[in-house]
Image (cartoon, rainbow over all chains, first blue to last red; front, side, top):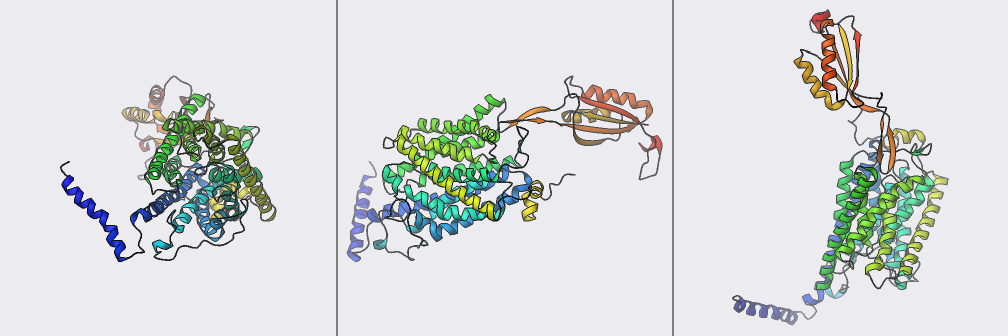
Length: 439
Length: 112
């Protein structure tokens, strides 16, 4: 109350300021007009560099879960795939995925992304959205996540260059085409499919591409012998844990940025709500795996807890906004449970997934997409299932064809000798831990 | 002179070293080894897959002592390394023909 006599004149002056500005330059819009554009652009930039950081998370997780003789190769694949995705998404991906008006299935829009001119005038900006550059930057980080999922599953036995060629096509063509069906305003979006930040569009797509690769590539030598599963423990669980925490951090940008708007009280509050729900799902997934491995195996398995945490995150990604905190908790916890049962299940089928990415990204992604219907009354189970099936069939078939072509032409698997010696020395001639020799 | 080779549980190493030093031993060779005996491995679970650990980690001690104290040292090791549970290890005693101290050229019991 005491401050009132100062506040009134100040706010009165502030109210007058735009009028003065307008008097000088009739074209300059007030903050009410450009504020939302600035805030949303900022959301994309902050969200984008958080999702960028997930590339580091994937790299560390995978480096930790492969054996030490394959660490350099895994790191090489991770930085190479991220860099290639960045170029391909500019060259064709972005405009293929966000073509504007199109037939809803496939946009014949093979043009590179063009940014706004330097020093864009407010009158020329899309004030109802955000800058094209920030949008491109943000969306690009998602496609890189999809490619990272593939590298983890196929680790320790795939050749470098055929893998990178697959990444080119996945990030430049496959992902943008299927992505346009929903996020580009295509047929699934018309139908009412709901996938907020990409449980299906990003995570399951990576999982399907990886599953096709794992089936065609085959398991690592000695992984399944005489009806037994032969575990191949990862080289560094400290790195794997760091990678998981980095992914967890990046996910706030992944889900929060997918609000795609921050210019109103409602929008920015929703972003906060998404952050809180995302964190809850990760916690619940980790705790579920923690308790379940203790009960099932009498000892906690850290690698499962890490996978459980990530599965919780994938599960909430399709609908991080609508659920209550309790909703995020149980949706994430189911994700953690899925992982603990799916990892040995894949081993039974002799599908060798080195880092557990298929349970985490594909299975929990499917679960998360189904779970949308519990809290989002606009979503229907049938449409969700149609979406899941459409992404699954398209990505699995397209990827399988590409993997077969690569296998038949250049070959996708290293020689037996190279696999036993480790890809670090055989393919790169460089070890990650050169001073760790025994004896 | 006798060579005493003892395989013991790794967590007992410090205790055994202390007991041997107290008993007058001035030299000891230690190697981390893996092997199997009556304990013959055990099972562990990694990512839901049960696997057999065929070789159990042990520590191998080697010490050369005078004939007169060999039995005493064996007893010290046995008493200190014992837990009463399976996998406590084994001790072997062998005759030693000669010992040489490299620095001085001393031989026999003077060298140990």
